[in-house]
Length: 129
Image: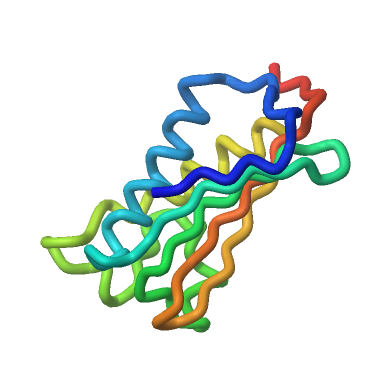
């Protein structure tokens, strides 16, 4: 795993426990779907008034037809439905809700056999409560 920090402005005001859940979910998924010789990157950038955090892997990627539904509650791709690798299908839905509740946004980009990137934007000045 590699961390690439491209900004000195890495402090955002968030609910620590919720954000831990978001990034634990994203990292767990990256580990689960990346082969042993693959790589996982965490990248931080300043983009306008937000901290942009990318969790990127060199895993198997996600089929394009699944991408619009990844943040839906109980949605799992066909390959993620097995007992061995599956979850409840709630992790990404919860992650999105937590990010949105912080006035942020989350996106996904993926290319089959090349990997997946989850991009989280969290505003520097935030009123979440």
